[in-house]
Length: 484
Image (cartoon, rainbow, N blue to C red; front, side, top):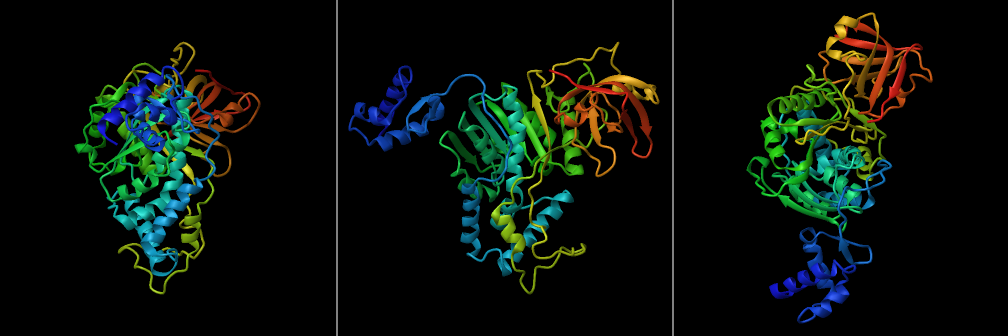
């Protein structure tokens, strides 16, 4: 198709969008040479982000509505079958149909053990093609789910427009990207840009072929430090990448400059202690040094205050169904001479089918930063009626009233339920300990991560062993979930 025909298709689309749904069958009649309707449809797909067009199931196009997305989110149960099949196809291409067994299976299991070990030690990981496949096997499914839970909250707040421009920094093999598509592309027009310099980009591009008709991806194979774009983004996503950057604070500062005026920068990390605490440290440094507001979840309730501690805060959601490729690798037959364990480490006692290579826990830490001063919780406590956590030392052994955000699931393996809470001013960790459940304090357990709670008549104790304050919630304590 020549440039004149393409221009004619654009002109006709611009006119018809004001009148009725755009039908490629109709447009082809108005274009010189009458190109096939399928060719017209392809041009409209390629021009959809510039023209602001959503493609409908019937193959026609209509203007994307202005305003925020309006979606219904019920959680994530499983990785879609199309994604699962494409990963398995790539494994067969690389290793053959018997990829979970023998030498190929042993190589993949060794690679997964190795990048997990390096990650936990804070060492860099090189993503060549085999490592990218191992990463997809082990990490893609839970990352696919985590991104949706975080972004669904933003959408519920009206913070994701229907015409959404996304920058995904360190996109890896595509777990978060596929999550964005699965969550939004039926309701929104998504212009998605991935920055991924490693060989993982090959697998990323293949998996992006599984995205919906209104998800328009572009992959940039360069480091984020070298990436340049003149257009602002409504959403900048840094998922599971900040711990691998040498200067994460400076990079986040540059990314804030690339946000639209009402855009959100979302950073997600695994829930392990070191990485989750590292995310909070980065969040505090960016907030202190640059024009950024913590939108969620660790909202600063008291004006002019910020935490003096980097707490281990994370969320937990239901596990997803085990993908077939994880189960197959976990149950694959081991070869006679598996690769040696990394020097200096003891080889773990692992057995075929014991779950070592199954990873479906949806646990993650996240931070949402904005530059417009907006917060998910627009609430300032009354200092006459509310104790500030920065001054909790004054209240030890006393009963007080306070307000706090719920910042963890139940952290107790057994015994009294225990939840991290904070008001943004705390200098030490603060834990709400439920010693006696009642109808008056039940919201503590039922509240979601990031919800605002008000505590009345809660007992303050100092826990010297943990270096933290315990807010003892008993039968005399009232806990309310506050509207925001």
